[in-house]
Length: 420
Image (cartoon, rainbow, N blue to C red; front, side, top):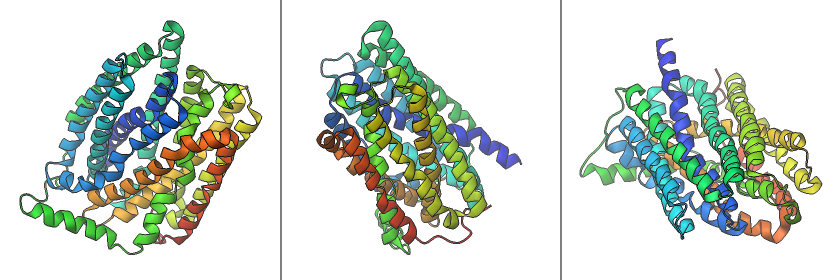
């Protein structure tokens, strides 16, 4: 019971801390750039490039594992992230704000990716058994998504209200990012005092051993049994979702004469960033409970089905263009619940793949391939949408989910893995 209580003191807050910079870089930037007049093609292309640090983070993940402690890396990267949020707030009124904010978001993305490496490894060291990790996978997912509610919901709503009051989107978003910076630096201070110090959290190599261990770490990952279907699963599990997510905000915010729903920024923060993400959190918790009850092997295909079929609600929204916020909120809640439910299975599968020697670096490699699977489709999603229009684009995104079903049927999972 003592170990369980200490885990509740830091697992939720670290997971929340992982989500904050990611939300700022990958989600708030999209809404902000849309408010500031950047085109769908440009905002999709350039913000998708921000995934790159998460793609290539395995290249420096062994360094995080070999030098310093995961605890120290986690706190330090939160400090860097807070400074980056403050820098965005200070540059939004610059004449060349798009270029400067992209540079800052790039730096934040690299620090956030490094934070993910350290905190994911710290999670596995702080909760060393697969049973403990499985028990908290839903909690991790839920609090990560709570960062989305606070950011994509509450802060986007605040930005919308500030835009209404001042008529200046740059000023509104500057205030929002300054507030985020203060809150994130407070979280960093909390973790400096609260995070445990596992005995296993220590440096593993130095000097001439670096290159040998670096090569050994990567070789060990790619020599895992069934690595080809594993890589296919990591790359294709969210192929449709990667495109849909990148265009969801532009669709909801674009006026109706452009095929969008014409929501205000405040309404977007309410229906997608709050109600939608709350459904995402509930779905993540339900997914974790489902895996704990039935095991990942039995639950995977049904969870893939529940994750992807609700994407069809975007086809309905783009066709019917309802103006009732209750209808829109219900549709988004259904889609987001399914996404959260299925993503819990994806998180636990990466834990399975990473298990063994160099688990921190191997988990980082898994998330790198996951990020590549989000980056490449996201880069072209804006261009595809402009060619097809929103309705046909969402039909295409639904068709793009089919490879996930194929790969889920091909991966090998121990019968009792994840089952309580």
